[in-house]
Amino acid sequence: MFAVFSLVAEQAGGVSAPGSSACADPAADIEVALISKTGPFTGRVRITGIVKNLGSAAWKSTARNHRLQMALTQKNSDARPNGDPVEPPLAVSHMKPGQQFRIDHQVDWNAKTNLSYPGFIVRLSDSGRVGGYSPSYRPDCRSDNNRKEISAADINNLFNPAPSSGKPLEAQSYRLLGGVGSNTVESTLVYKKSSPAAGKITASVAAPYSGTVDEVPITGNTGSATVRVRIACDRYESPGLPSRPVAITYRLWNSLGLPGTSRWVAGFSTEQSILYGALCAARR
Image 1 (spheres, rainbow, N blue to C red):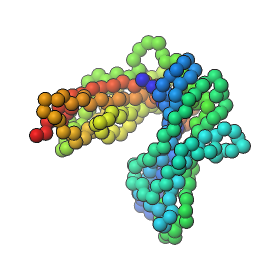
Image 2 (cartoon, rainbow, N blue to C red):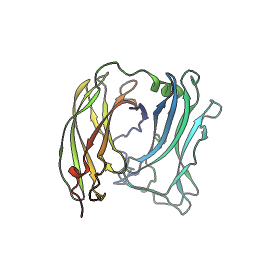
Image 3 (tube, rainbow, N blue to C red):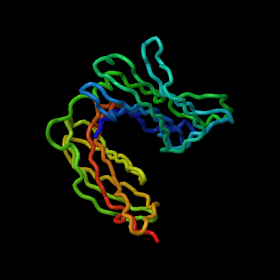
Image 4 (cartoon, rainbow, N blue to C red):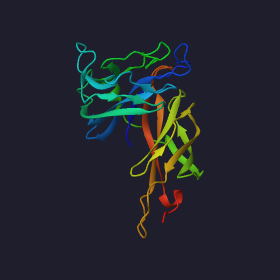
């Protein structure tokens, strides 16, 4: 179990450019995960910069050398507000609606000494020469969500102790909905949150299997939610050799700060294992 912070890019309604029916909206997001703990205040932290197209149209470069540049930087002082890159920047030429790209970076962390710095920033900008395009076409219909920053204080919160009792998230039951070339697991999860503020449940499928899922918004301190995970049936089973069970990890996210802010924390997760043979019939 590990804790995760995410500064989620807020999506406003009606982002389409004036005079157009569709609009691209590449938006920045940043996550921080405590992947190992070596002491009460020390451990290994993973910072992930994310760009996701929240719009209804694809983002496309306007010239051969025009790109959407994504950078994950470390801010060590206010003298350099944009920080310095910690990994090679990512250049994107095409991004479909809902598509995302990620940059990962790991660092050793001490919550006792890293009180004010470093912080981490993910930011988007155009690189190369922007080509000409008609007034109705906008490569990025919003620019106010092209930067996200997380502070040292936010990262230090990953080392806060977990509640001593109770299971914040538990998979209660599931059923298989079937599919062509895949199978969908529909699970009912029961959650307990410390705040009635908005939250969400996400899911991920462990390798070597793959799956897709949409996050499910939740409200209130307690309740239940239905999460559907589509598992790809693209693995062949070897006769006489049992395949590894499909492991699905569900995570509970709570909002931080005042209502309407875009800060989230996920400190709890639960895992569900289902035999691959039960999901996908053996292929011959």
